[in-house]
Image (cartoon, rainbow, N blue to C red; front, top):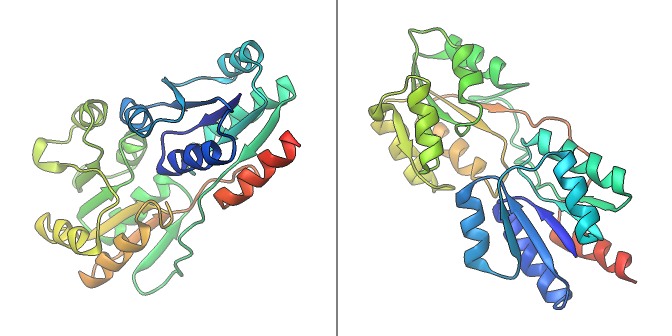
Length: 254
């Protein structure tokens, strides 16, 4: 059995690739959000577990189900689950393979600013503008807003999920300040949203091509507004292509 962590597009592509190479190998995929789990179920090819699992739960699952390998395809900013997965794999002695989508590699300058974390992003955005268009999701919203002066206006683009909307409302955002939209979206739609909400600065993660970072940057430049990119946290060494993950699993099975 292969345990694959992640409700991302990367995870779904990995499930498909693993099924092609190992058609008789059971794949169990986990997703924290119901939306990520639903997408995995729609695609098929794996048993889906929904909800967060800490290292203790992962360790028990690995032992009980005799998992041979843990493939970590969680989001580049989901540092905690990556550490939990690595700890569980080390505890049980199974192979741990980290897949991390390549970053956007967009150079700083010409309106593009990089910061180290979400607190620094809030501080930089506050210095640059009054109306901030936030595209970091809902899970870091509290951290961002707590570092932002109260007179600043935030428009948050989040997933159209009940949990995401609830977090926005609990953090004081009104319905008029919430854009519930599944990404990634085109440069044109990004630019239209920035214009419609009178954004003066955009804040985003460096989620790479898969996460639509290039389109956000291009749209911000077209609208002549700055964009702040939060650098990725340090992560475990891993692989940047699905082919590399499949090759590593082949070696494990040989």
